[in-house]
Image 1: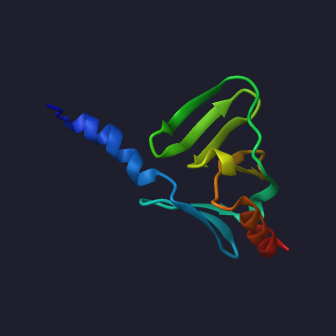
Image 2 (image 1 turned 90 degrees about the vertical axis):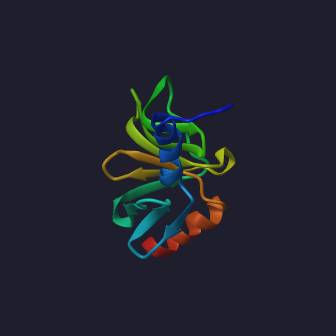
Length: 124
Protein backbone atom coordinates (compact mmCIF):
# COMPACT_ATOMS: atom_id res chain seq x y z
CA UNK A 1 0.00 0.00 0.00
CA UNK A 2 1.32 3.43 -0.99
CA UNK A 3 1.08 6.23 1.54
CA UNK A 4 2.22 9.80 1.12
CA UNK A 5 3.36 12.07 3.89
CA UNK A 6 3.05 15.87 3.78
CA UNK A 7 6.60 16.22 2.47
CA UNK A 8 5.90 13.95 -0.50
CA UNK A 9 2.70 15.79 -1.36
CA UNK A 10 4.56 19.11 -1.16
CA UNK A 11 7.51 17.86 -3.25
CA UNK A 12 5.36 16.37 -6.01
CA UNK A 13 2.35 18.66 -5.78
CA UNK A 14 4.06 22.06 -5.80
CA UNK A 15 5.52 21.73 -9.33
CA UNK A 16 1.99 21.11 -10.62
CA UNK A 17 1.06 24.73 -9.80
CA UNK A 18 4.15 26.29 -11.40
CA UNK A 19 4.30 24.22 -14.60
CA UNK A 20 4.00 26.13 -17.88
CA UNK A 21 0.63 25.72 -19.59
CA UNK A 22 1.22 28.01 -22.56
CA UNK A 23 2.46 31.36 -23.75
CA UNK A 24 0.64 34.51 -24.81
CA UNK A 25 1.83 37.68 -26.51
CA UNK A 26 0.33 41.05 -25.59
CA UNK A 27 1.29 44.52 -26.82
CA UNK A 28 3.71 44.86 -23.89
CA UNK A 29 4.84 41.39 -22.87
CA UNK A 30 5.20 37.67 -23.40
CA UNK A 31 3.13 35.94 -20.72
CA UNK A 32 4.11 32.55 -19.32
CA UNK A 33 0.79 30.97 -18.38
CA UNK A 34 0.89 28.83 -15.23
CA UNK A 35 -1.80 27.64 -12.83
CA UNK A 36 -0.32 29.83 -10.07
CA UNK A 37 1.38 33.13 -10.83
CA UNK A 38 1.96 33.76 -14.51
CA UNK A 39 5.32 35.21 -15.54
CA UNK A 40 5.97 38.24 -17.77
CA UNK A 41 8.78 39.11 -20.13
CA UNK A 42 8.52 42.73 -21.21
CA UNK A 43 8.87 43.06 -25.00
CA UNK A 44 11.10 46.11 -24.62
CA UNK A 45 13.69 43.88 -22.89
CA UNK A 46 13.79 41.43 -25.82
CA UNK A 47 16.98 41.60 -27.90
CA UNK A 48 16.79 38.44 -30.03
CA UNK A 49 14.69 35.32 -30.66
CA UNK A 50 16.22 32.03 -31.84
CA UNK A 51 14.37 29.01 -33.19
CA UNK A 52 15.28 26.38 -32.20
CA UNK A 53 16.88 27.35 -28.91
CA UNK A 54 20.59 26.76 -28.47
CA UNK A 55 22.01 24.76 -25.58
CA UNK A 56 24.62 26.11 -23.18
CA UNK A 57 28.04 24.49 -23.56
CA UNK A 58 29.42 22.51 -20.65
CA UNK A 59 27.74 21.53 -17.42
CA UNK A 60 24.46 23.14 -16.35
CA UNK A 61 23.23 23.18 -12.78
CA UNK A 62 19.54 23.38 -11.91
CA UNK A 63 18.94 25.82 -9.06
CA UNK A 64 15.18 25.87 -8.50
CA UNK A 65 13.98 23.52 -11.18
CA UNK A 66 11.85 20.57 -12.22
CA UNK A 67 13.00 18.14 -14.87
CA UNK A 68 10.75 15.34 -16.06
CA UNK A 69 7.61 15.90 -14.06
CA UNK A 70 5.35 18.25 -16.09
CA UNK A 71 8.27 19.24 -18.33
CA UNK A 72 11.48 21.14 -17.63
CA UNK A 73 11.13 24.48 -15.92
CA UNK A 74 12.77 26.74 -13.39
CA UNK A 75 16.12 28.46 -13.03
CA UNK A 76 19.44 27.05 -14.16
CA UNK A 77 23.06 28.19 -14.11
CA UNK A 78 25.88 27.60 -16.55
CA UNK A 79 29.44 28.97 -16.58
CA UNK A 80 28.98 30.41 -20.09
CA UNK A 81 25.38 31.64 -19.88
CA UNK A 82 25.11 32.53 -16.20
CA UNK A 83 21.62 32.25 -14.75
CA UNK A 84 18.83 31.45 -17.20
CA UNK A 85 15.24 30.26 -17.09
CA UNK A 86 13.50 27.37 -18.84
CA UNK A 87 9.76 26.82 -19.37
CA UNK A 88 9.63 23.79 -21.67
CA UNK A 89 6.99 21.09 -22.03
CA UNK A 90 7.96 19.99 -25.56
CA UNK A 91 11.67 19.71 -26.40
CA UNK A 92 10.85 19.74 -30.14
CA UNK A 93 9.41 23.29 -30.00
CA UNK A 94 12.05 25.34 -28.21
CA UNK A 95 12.46 29.08 -28.62
CA UNK A 96 15.31 31.06 -27.06
CA UNK A 97 14.63 34.60 -25.88
CA UNK A 98 17.74 36.70 -25.39
CA UNK A 99 17.20 39.78 -23.27
CA UNK A 100 18.95 43.16 -23.25
CA UNK A 101 20.53 42.38 -19.86
CA UNK A 102 22.29 39.32 -21.39
CA UNK A 103 20.05 36.70 -19.79
CA UNK A 104 18.19 33.98 -21.67
CA UNK A 105 14.82 32.30 -21.35
CA UNK A 106 13.97 29.04 -23.13
CA UNK A 107 10.27 28.37 -23.81
CA UNK A 108 8.28 25.87 -25.90
CA UNK A 109 5.21 27.37 -27.57
CA UNK A 110 3.04 24.89 -29.49
CA UNK A 111 3.85 26.60 -32.80
CA UNK A 112 7.25 28.31 -32.58
CA UNK A 113 7.00 30.04 -35.98
CA UNK A 114 3.56 31.51 -35.21
CA UNK A 115 4.82 32.60 -31.79
CA UNK A 116 7.83 34.39 -33.30
CA UNK A 117 5.57 36.06 -35.86
CA UNK A 118 3.22 37.24 -33.10
CA UNK A 119 6.15 38.77 -31.20
CA UNK A 120 7.55 40.42 -34.32
CA UNK A 121 4.12 41.90 -35.10
CA UNK A 122 4.08 43.54 -31.65
CA UNK A 123 7.61 44.96 -31.63
CA UNK A 124 7.63 46.43 -35.15
